[in-house]
Length: 371
Ligand SMILES: Nc1ncnc2c1ncn2[C@@H]1O[C@H](COP(=O)(O)OP(=O)(O)OP(=O)(O)O)[C@@H](O)[C@H]1O
Ligand SMILES: [Mg+2]
Image (cartoon, rainbow, N blue to C red; front, side, top):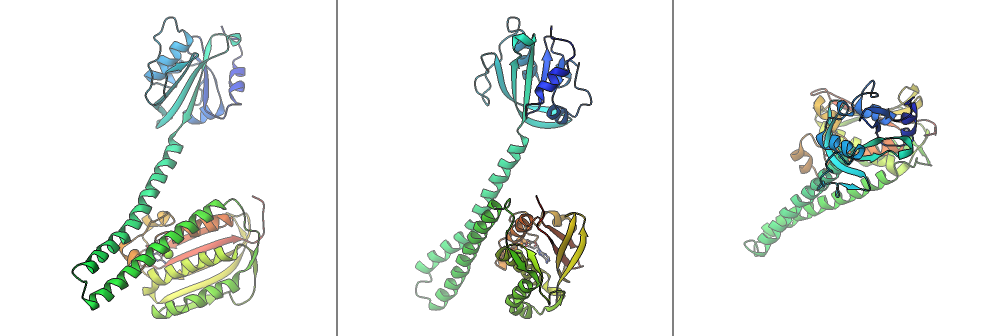
């Protein structure tokens, strides 16, 4: 019989970074660490039959066997988890219900050291988070492949036409070469954007060390977009960007941020004929818990429906894929923006409504705070 005063079991398990329970020889719970309480959401996990906490036949069998191997059948090997048991420890993978939620878990059931009495520990490693990350990685690879395949297929088609039916047609040849050059440029851009995204992600934890004259940088970006704005019939209005204001930041990356936001405002919001770029100081930005600079890029175009807004910064997410593609977009722009803003410990705020135009606000901390 295990010693009285079961707190020791929970205290012992607290040192383990995985949700873990302990049961006594009668399979009643005598210990649970905080991770287990969080996972199973139970107010009181203790002094209950184990099966009421984790009702999974394979897990219950494993616990029974570990507690009393002479009177219970040995667990069968699990194709996912390998050998069923080694030295009295059972490992298995199971889909279990925790706090009303289905999770994929790796479970390890082990006998307590005999000095502590008859009992067992059950560790439950929630694999859903890693599985989600795996799924995201697979989706990403599929998206990249698809994005590259589309221009490649077009180019292969044109090469074939140029070799065959259009071989002696000078006019068709010029036209096809133009299209091929455009498709190749798009692939080139896609690859550059992917590289840029991975670089930004890799150094996201490292805060930029430099300082940037933000109004000067904004004037510079606007100058490079001047022609595009004029061609789209967009009138540019600026506010608060006349002077000079040093702000902590990475100049190249901030150029990338504002280039994409201004380009988007012209490309997708240009129908409103208006582009507003303004900069202002916020004495206390609640999200950043301190003073900050806010740069807002506004257009009066068609706006974005609410359901798309939270997804805009996902890689390859576009409201209208055809339109974005036709304009040479890769759908990576806002993903890059988000990671750069994160690296600056800032925030990106998107306000938009269908028919109301859009506003993208980049909020950057004024000082180099910790964290
Ligand atoms: N100002 C805006 N008005 C309306 N829709 C916008 C605006 N800005 C972005 N969007 C929508 O968000 C999508 C994602 O923008 P993002 O900058 O990430 O990609 P992109 O512009 O399509 O491609 P890239 O930036 O690589 O050229 C766009 O395709 C567009 O549908
Ligand atoms: Mg863009």
